[in-house]
Amino acid sequence: MFTEQTEALFRSVTPAVLNLAKSSFLAAASHDLRQPVHALSLFVGALREIPMPPNAGRLIEQIDASANAMDKLFAALLDISKLDAGVVPVDRHSFFIGPVLDRVCGGCAAEAAAKGLTLSCVPSRVTVNSDPTLVERIVRNLVSNAVRYTDAGKIVVGCRRRGSFVAIQVWDTGRGIPQDQQDRVFHEYYQIGNPERDREKGLGLGLAIVRRLADLLECELTLRSEPGRGSCFEISIARSNRAAGPLEIPVDEGDSASSTGFVVVVDDEQAIREGMSSLLTRWGYEVVAAGSADEAIERLSTLTVRPDLLICDFRLRDGENGIEAIERLRTEYNEHIPAMLITGDTAVDRLQEAKTSELLLLHKPVLNGKLRAAIDNLIANGTRIS
Image 1 (cartoon, rainbow, N blue to C red):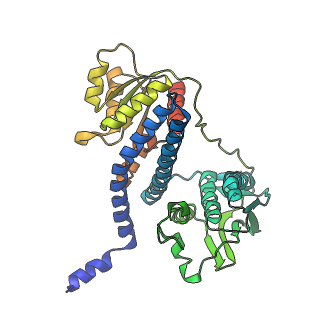
Image 2: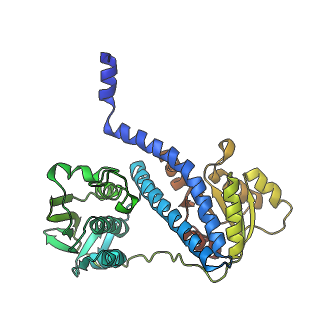
């Protein structure tokens, strides 16, 4: 039987506390799961560099597709953790919304066409003031959601001017959402019509991320929907009278023609050290892989060449972390050697610590193209990239 003190304790558990507890659980589970998936991605990347018969190549493609599916889930979990941790920066400035909508629709066009859907984008020359990267993530999630839950008909993306604001709208002729479930679709893992948790129908995280991003940008998010007649998701963004600045061009993640350099890898997981060594060696790098800073220093003491790059896992054994390992290795050479952190950790305090370090941070599992682009950029420029 509950006592008055027990009931008072349950009443004191606020949604914020529950969210923190949930994020902590997800962080612990995510870290342990990311390790073998990251190693798998590295080994697949190394296998791609080995000539093999067509039937073996198809198997590699299937393994890679499964690894990429897991990567999408982890990326969504990471987005949730980052937003809950308050470590997602907002870079507000004026930009044309039209190119953002065009790019999102272009990226979703193939998936829509495969379902026989018409996806159209209404041209716009409106200038808004917000963070273009985060706005694009919101629109991309909304359009992807519309494509996934529309079985026939069309999807229209466009803007409406409303005084000092611009309403970005995503209309679809999909299944529609009952009134009593319209708030719940913005909750994590909640999906209408997917009790079997079919991954092909999504993960139930896209709209939860949209809600958090809208709150972060202080934008009004609304939904109008009727079962059988489709839905309209709308996000309101402040208009701008200032000149629009250029949109940032994403880092090219394509494979480089050739790579050279001496890379030191510090990771306490043997499978990841072996996978990273195999992959980087295939790409043309010289590699020394160690399980700790002490081991790395000992192995480097017999070499005369200075490392071109340090790649360290964030959480190492015996309480050591990658930030400390990087500082120790830099001290050994008395030079600011380019470095990056790779982690499977999504705990709030560790995300904040990594951000403070100002080191490039990649999250396991890392796509091979992204890893190669980051390595090439750091070695070429000797600076941090984001």
